[in-house]
Image (tube, rainbow, N blue to C red; front, side, top):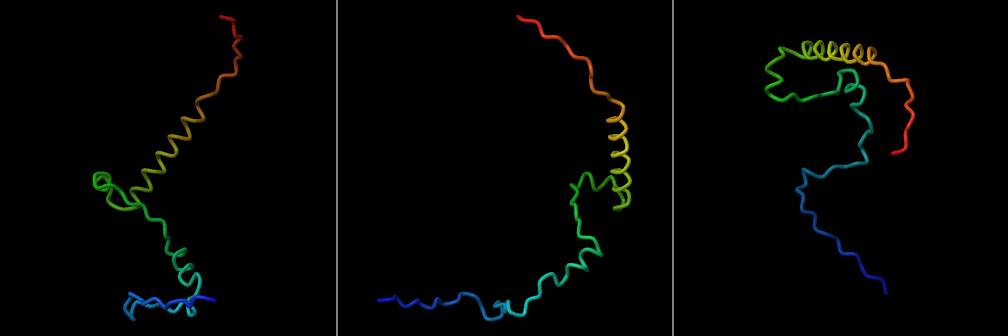
Length: 86
């Protein structure tokens, strides 16, 4: 004998129900891409140092240049050391 499934009473109000049959996948995707959806939240003390997003971008670009130039200056050691038995 099969059990009958009880219909659960829905706790949500009728205005919160959503009909997924009318949903469109990626409806706002193009707009997000065109406007730019990369958001980074700065700590308040860091945000005080910059006037706008352009200042933050300039500072990060200069930091990247310094990091790349310092990485290019250092050269890995090519000498091979012989190990001695202890």
